[in-house]
Structures are given as C-alpha cells and as structure tokens.
Length: 279
Image (cartoon, rainbow, N blue to C red; front, top):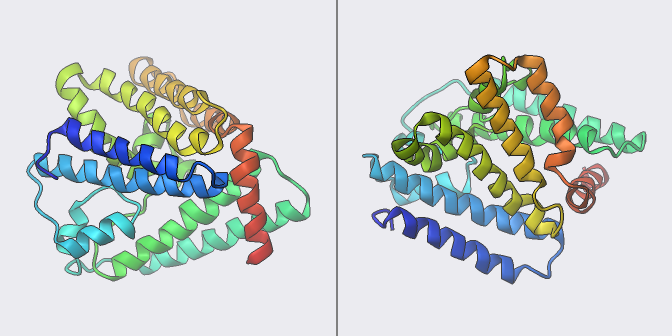
C-alpha cells in the first residue's frame, strides 16, 4: 500500500470513511463521532506513513506500526523505528498529566454543581482533562517503554502568537500530520505561504468530518474558524499583526464557532455529564 500513488492512498481513506459513515448513520452522534474520528485517524496515519516512506523513511515492523496507529495519537513515525531502545525521562509527564486530569475533572464537577453549561467553560475543562491529562500520561507511558515520543499539547498560555500556537503548542499530532501529508506536497508546487494557508482551510474540512458530519448540523462553521485562523497566521507573518493576547482571545471567542450548538448539545455536554456521574 505504501508504494501506491498519493491519490490512491487518499482515495482509499475517503472510501473507508464514507463506508463507515453509512454503517453508523443510525447511531447516536457520540458513537458516530468516535467511529468516524477513529477511521480518520487510522487513515491519516496511513497517509502520513506513505508520505514518510516516499521521502526516504524506513519500514516499521508490524508491532511498532500497530502501536503507532492504535495506541498513540501522534503522527510522527520516527520514534517508533527504535521501539524500546531510547530511555527518556517520563516521570514529569506522568505527574503533570495526572495533575491536569484531576484539575480538569474537578472543574467538570464544579460546573455541574453550579449548573454551568457554556461551551467555552466545559471545553476548557474537558481539554485540560484529556489533551493535557490523558494524553500527557500516555506520553509518559510510552517514554517509560523507551519510545521517544513528546507531549502533543504544550502550554498554550505561553504562545507568542498565532504561528507559535498552531505550530509548536496545540495538537502537534495534527500539525505533524498536516505538515507531512498536505503542506510539504503543496509547497513543492505553490510555495510556503499558500501551502500554509491551504493547510488551515483543509483543517476546517477535516473538522467538518469529525464535528458537523456526526451531528448532521452546523456545516461550514469549523471551516470558517480555521480559515480565519489561517488568515491571522498570514497577517502575523506578513505584517506582524498578532501577538499572544490577540491569539488567545480569538481562540476562546472562536470555540462556539468551532463547535456548533448541535455538537455541543449532542456530544460535549453529554460527555461532561457522563464523566461527572460515573467517575
């Protein structure tokens, strides 16, 4: 599969996504989201691995590849070439991750007690619990097993601007994926500036597949969010218009745009309520 043309690998991913979409079309939105996001993640790892191989990367053995696809959220195949051979500090990741997990869940309990259901508040709590908690613990686990992975979410409050936030701090798995699978091929034809902006537009389309398609509503809003962020990155690079607080402010205010009301009601709030009831 890894030697297939680029269009064939992408076509296979799209075909599998559409097939799963049909299979789960009558399920509840949360299960639809999980199924479709799982397919997207596995499919995009295949795309990334294919691009990596095309660029001269080595073969992963079957077990490291399985771990890379099914037990890690990052998109960089390189750490999995030396599975179990790299000893790294891992205790800090575990401690920080557990602390963030406890803080995030505690906030969810507080919001439930105070009957706060605004998407910004609930998303920040869920993000602290999962992005900075669960995923950081997972980072520590794999580092303790000798895999040289790194934290995927890195203190967004220290971001110096839009480029720093999206390129070095928020969801580096996604940044890795888009850099390898989309930006690099586009740069070869259209140059860096257009490639970077196109990455944000395509990111919006990917989030449509993960957010609006499962709930069947709010189409176009995630694309609008990421297109605006791409515009901010371009302005910052070209004219120096940006900075830390403009970046963070636009992100917080953009959360209701990224997550339409139908997704909030069908996925975010039910997940929050489930966690506070069963933990």
